[in-house]
Length: 386
Ligand SMILES: *Cc1c(COP(=O)(O)O)cnc(C)c1O
Image (cartoon, rainbow, N blue to C red; front, side, top):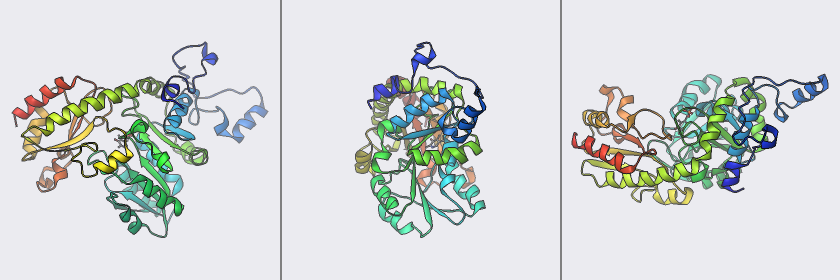
């Protein structure tokens, strides 16, 4: 289906809603039935209709149809945030005694799930950097049932060879899940490479305005139903109708925002790379990126998020730089209208800062919708002070 049809038409039965152009916000918790027989048949298949908004809701369903189609998947489920989508994407497919193979340094709450929650239930996770298929082959165990991917990673942008990992996993009946938040389906299409479940935080690019959280999981009808019928309803972390409505609004402009953000990021990145006080930039589609060739093969764009380091990147210099910026806001998250900066050292105890560990010097930047020249002037002023 064409992108314009997905964004403008799919799922929008306007004739049911007075031909309103904007989608209806059905802010309701429950749905009424005329007969016991109708209620009974609804109970028999909770995914087949509307009973209670912890399950399905018509406003959320409009977004659900669009995001499934955008991923080229049969079905989707929407969550209150990306972390909830990760949890519900992993939980149904692991049981006591199973082994999960994950890429190193996945999104922090995925890592906490693997390190602190799942071990309580006898599920062990091991990590590999995942840049080479041989690492996957070597790390698999007889009881590995799940492979967790994040390509690119949202700090160091490490990539995994997705088609090869998918083939390896499928041959062994192992379920694969990728966190595709960095790329969105506009820049990377993991289902087409054979990955089973795609997760995205909708808080970032899909919302795009830093005013709501959301998460999405896409896959086959069968897998999505399996998640829905037990874990999704039991965990109860589905998206609210109002937040779905906001995300539908954001989704309309996703392609234009990503196009603009990618172009601005390239301008800002080129300027930073040429600056004498900047040591390195990390961006998957930068020709100097170590996995540039793989990035070109798997991704059609890279958006506005990248990492840089300063020459002599001490915590003091990094702090001076970040605090001198006026237009880049210092905050977590990304994918919204506003440009952001996030120094890794803010999450490291000053006594534990290791100057020889490049990652400790990372400064993550996100270029939003501002004019690139406006952002460059800000960077110029801040770099003059370090
Ligand atoms: C933000 C983020 C998440 C989690 O999404 P939330 O909506 O904040 O829960 C997961 N993965 C990546 C890569 C993220 O950046």
